[in-house]
Every structure is written in C-alpha cells, then in structure tokens.
Image (cartoon, rainbow, N blue to C red; front, side, top):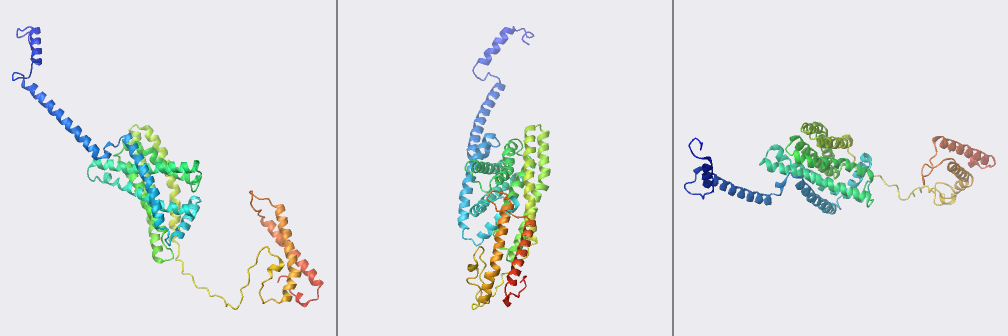
Length: 451
C-alpha cells in the first residue's frame, strides 16, 4: 500500500511507529480508544469478580468441592465430629434409658440375635452400650441420605444441591473411616474389641466401599444419577432400618398392640432392605461401572468392581437374618399371662430335694414322714450302699476308658457305653437284692425288684 501511494516503506513504518508511541489525543483512532476503555472495564470487572468469589468462598465452605484436598479436609472434620457425637450421645442415651423397664429385655434379645445370626459374643454392658450408640449411628446415616435428595429432585440451585449431596456422602466416609480405625485399634492394640475377629471382619466388609469409592466418584461423577441414587438408598434405608430395629427392641411382645407393631415394622424393614440392597443395588451398580468403563476410567472401574462386589457379600449376609427375624415374629403367638399356681398346704412339709454327692445319712436326715423308720433303715442298710458302690465303679470305669476332647473338659461317654453301664448296674443291683432277700426272713422284703 505505501509503495502504491508513492511513499517509501521506511518512512511509512517510522510514521506508524511514532503514531503508536504518541500520547492519546483526539488525533488517535477511535478504535484504539474503544479497546483501551474495554480493557479497563474488563480489568475492573475481573477485580470485582475476584472479590465476590473470595467473599462467596468465605460465606460458603462447600465452594471448594469437589476438590480432593477439600474432600479430605471435610472428611477429617466430620470424622472428629461423628466420634464425639457417638461417644457423648451414646452416654447420654444410656443414662436416660438406664432405668427403663425394657432394658433387661433389650439386652436379652440383642444378645440372642447377635449370637445366633452373626456369631458375636458380647457382655451385657457391651450390648447396652452398642444399643445406645446405634441411635446416633442411625441418625448419621439418615441425615446423610436426606442431604442427597435435593440434588436428585432438582430443588433449588443445582450447583449448591450437588455440593450438599457430596457433603452428605462424605459423612458416611467419615463414619466408616472412624469406625475402621477404632476397631483396628481395639483389636490389635488394646485387644478388647467386643465380638472379636468376627465383628472386625463384618465391619471391614461394610466400611470398605465408601472409603474406596466415594472420593473418586465425588471428584468425577458427582452429578451421575446412578451414583446419587445408590448413595441415597444405602444411607437413607440403612438409617431408617437402624431406627426401626432399635424401637422394636423396646416393645413388649406380651401385649397384642406391641406384637402387631412389631410385625408391621419387621415387614417394612425387610421390604425396604430388599429393594435397596438387591432390586435397586444391582442395576445401579451396573450403570455406574458401565459409565466408568466407557469414560476410560479403568482404575475407578476396577476399584468399583471389587468394592461393590464385597458390599454385595455384606448384603447377602444381612438379608437372610432379616428374613428369619421377620418370619419369627409373623408366626409368633401372643404369650398368655402367667397363671397363679396354688401353693400347697403349709401343714404338709415339702419333699426335700436330692443332694447329689451326699452320704446315706445326709440323704435321709430330713426325709418325708410318710416313710417309717424301719423302712428307711432297711433301704439305707441293704439297698442304697449297693447302688452307690455300683455308681462309683461305673464312674471310675467311664473315666478310665473315655478321653476328654479338650483340656479341662469332662469326658463324654458314648451311647453304647452308657447302655452297657446301665445294664450292668441293673444286673448287679438285682443280684444283690436277691442275695439280701434270700438271707432275710423279713416280710417287708417281699417287694418286687423293679419297685
């Protein structure tokens, strides 16, 4: 262009450079002024946006989600809060229900359920402490499940609802991490974990899924509906069933009303757990794993296969026990009130109980007055010594022939040995009876040997 107008390119270039370096005047092109004004407005807007972001972050601590560092910090804070809540809340509930009339019944029922269904062995104080702490644990599960509902229903701001859902799911991670650390410490360090190794394996089978799978899913799939539905089902249904189980332990099954309430609760509990742990759990797990595999997240897919599979094993252990519990209460009949047994006449002295291991004189020192002294003397002198000698010989023979199965355990004779021993005792007793009868002319001896 400068050559076409007859202007030397160097002079044109120098003149263009001077124009760019000149101060802004009314001779400067209008486009350059507009660009400068736009850049100044953009810088001012950026400063305002940054200040607003800092203010929003200070007001909303969840704004850092779903960052991994933010999740770890929130999980640590929630674990501390949950540990204090379980310790303090369990103690308060135990103190409030200490004098409750249902306390012995609750301890008896829980010990039977834990021992029969899961094989746990716990003392009365440990069972009562576990019962009271389950109220706080159920509240944590229920609250975590409720925080996921706004994101599923699309209520309110979508971004804030999903951050709230991530917080609710992190409460489960915090509880599982705290309970795992506490159980490992009590089992390997202090050696006083209630229930022992079976309780430890049961808890690890339940806690592993949230610890292994929630953090990466919050980071990459926080808006995935299969992930949100699964989290809400497992936490919400778990908390609801814990509360149902706790309240059912307080019912008195000797009344028609409480028995009807118990039947309703166990049916509802089994229906909800069957849906959330089987009917909805299997397709939601498949959808989440398929999404991770199609996205190329092979590490999340592998961890998910292992974690969801182990959680399925936990569900397989839990549902049969709930089914047996439901059937037990559905077929249970109302226990009638205890009838009053008439007491015998105070004039008739009761027959004293037989004291095993006593001597002949002790056995008949305070016998019933219906026997004459002659009859008692005859039995003591002729019959009882023979029978006791036979018993002593049979006991000695059993101890010498049978071997104990374990150290400190009494030997258990077989059925054949017991039959042979009883037969020998009857034969020896009959022989001694006939011998004593042949040498006696007392008419009282005319009694059948069977008598």
